Length: 44
Image 1 (cartoon, rainbow, N blue to C red):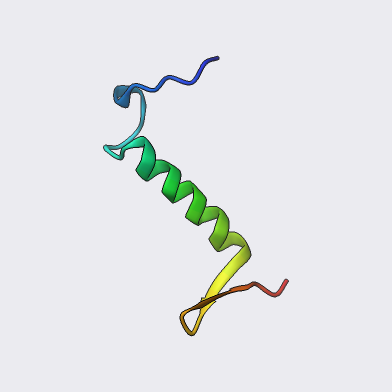
Image 2 (cartoon, rainbow, N blue to C red):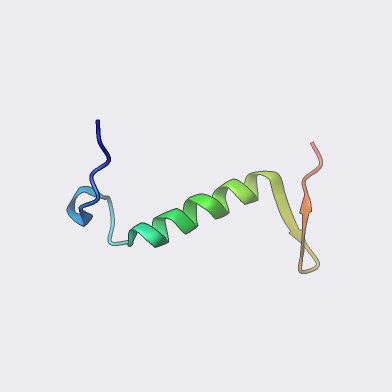
């Protein structure tokens, strides 16, 4: 099924760029945490 780029087909009012940024930061935050203004890999 092809990806539909129309805003009407997305949830919320965020732009495609905003959604991409949220997804990217979510992925980063799963692996890293911010400690004293620096990002460090999380301990398992």
